[in-house]
Length: 276
Ligand code: GLN
Image (tube, rainbow, N blue to C red; front, side, top):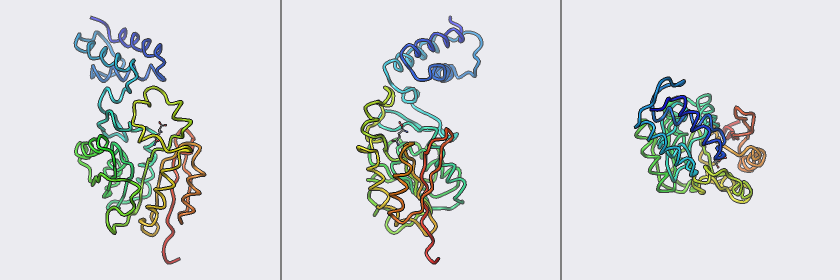
């Protein structure tokens, strides 16, 4: 028998020695996941719990992201299944859902491109009561998308297709279009931490300057917004001005929104009303 507190200390040290970015956080998450008990942990852990913890730690030490080991992760207070082949939902992406909650009402028609797990459209459908459409190209990610829609009982229609195909969904027009496209630059790809390297390159790499998906997606979809509709896209923290320029070239009025760490994170582009 080993005490929970001792186990926490041991695995925190092992994670720190392996260069994990936030060993204290990950150690607590692992203990919480495999004991199901709240922190701070008192008393001993069982042998079965210890075995599960040790297995998770050894996978983590081999570079696998914590979220893939757990097979699930929370976003906007909702559960999402995750694993190899799909981008892990990041907390900064919740900003897109906050924007939806502020600007959209029940019954809005919303499109999400490059959906991955579906964390954006599922959270918007649940929070706003919007009718959401989600587009994802890759098989593994599309599997997670459909399972997460079912898991959350969300009103999201998923389509497996290329998000750059602006002819999808016939003549439907949208109150809002969201996207967290791949935007990591060629130089940044060479510096990715080990755990991020396990995530699909197709969800990360946005071409030499990271902007290729915006150059293709914004012209493809800007015309599918209703008058006074908007497009809200996540960007890397140095990409806000460049993405704003692409929006302007396509008739949208852009505004850069910072995330909760103070970094440029989202560009919202409004389509002006028709009869002004
Ligand atoms: N924010 C992610 C990262 O830095 C990138 C996600 C994306 O390209 N959309 O790892």
